[in-house]
Length: 527
Image (cartoon, rainbow, N blue to C red; front, top):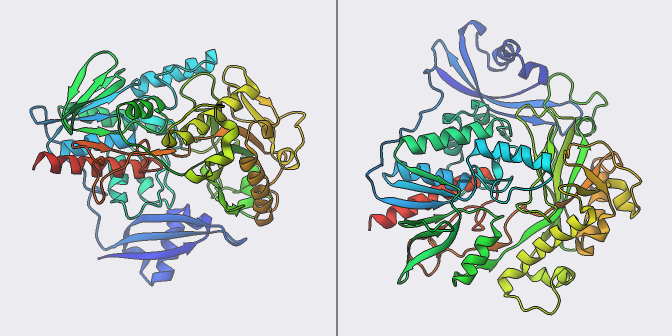
């Protein structure tokens, strides 16, 4: 007999299977000796009150054993002789599109401007050593995309877009721990994700797909009103219908598409700073205890959101036990992002703290636009984003060092005489961030931090610091798709996909969008 139960237990009980079985036996009235196996299906921390509880959904096997596999794996056939499709970009959207194409009997030609994830690691190490960014192999570009060295967060609010559990199972099939199937906010870890990405590439190659690194798309190929392939900067051409999954940092791709007459549209996005606290302080605040998380709780997370002057201000991509890293794709820009290893065991916690920007807000950011220059409307927000990154770089102006300011100093509008210890390895420069951030962003952040501190007293502190800037929360552009479809409006055989196309915001939602575009492409080929 197999039954499922909801449990609410103390952290110590949740961490010890023997105690968990005893709790279940008491709650459900099951003889302890009859419980052969207990599987945790979902798990979350309830820290709303001073007494912390763990909410669990468990599957109990009574007088019988479970099957050996916890989920059914997908089998990939040989597609080496099948019709080909071009997938541009090997981030989550592109990788999952390629894998889904194989399932559907189509040979993917996966084109990536950057390098394989193993080479990316070496390039990133050199980046830190030399304080210089490798333009085509960095935290943005390369196999795995911008998510390859992120926290590997697999939580998404996009419940209606597709089968989230399927995506999680695929991650497990390629090497993730099955813990991601259970946690309310699953994550893989920046130290584990590259190996999983490598396993996905190996599967694509084993199934007859092809992968091309160091191939930067420079043009779409057209035939009448139909996309028939791409041309790369080395002169090579690849033919077939195209899934375009280039990521939200490929600004040169946006400009290339614009020059080729491809319609783009402005969309809302957000910019601000990356905020870093000592993790021990966040543990104390979130778990309502001077002892912090103790022996049985994970590194604490937080989520804040408010409205200031008619625009949302919110935490984004919270990384407990993590690091802040340089995330620009070229020298001369100051862009930061957060990441965490699987153990989430660094001494610091960080998150983006960003302000919502809508397309109609562009006049509030005129100070960031070049003087007396004509600009197409759809490119304005992209220009504003890039200009803020340049302005923040000018505040530090030293290799990959980033400008930073203590949190309470920022709110009070005073300079920081020095900075606390932190995780950002290239180094920080004490700066007045009000000199770089437009008033429409800085004033909203000031007010939001005061509000967040009222909700969680002690959050606003000079033990924390703001690092600038957090500007890549999502794309400021969207490639329009036909109503009710996934193909680009006005052209056949082009499927804009993922964050770069403006249709997702994270690893799982990008993976789902990649699969959906692959399915639409397959249906097109079958017409």
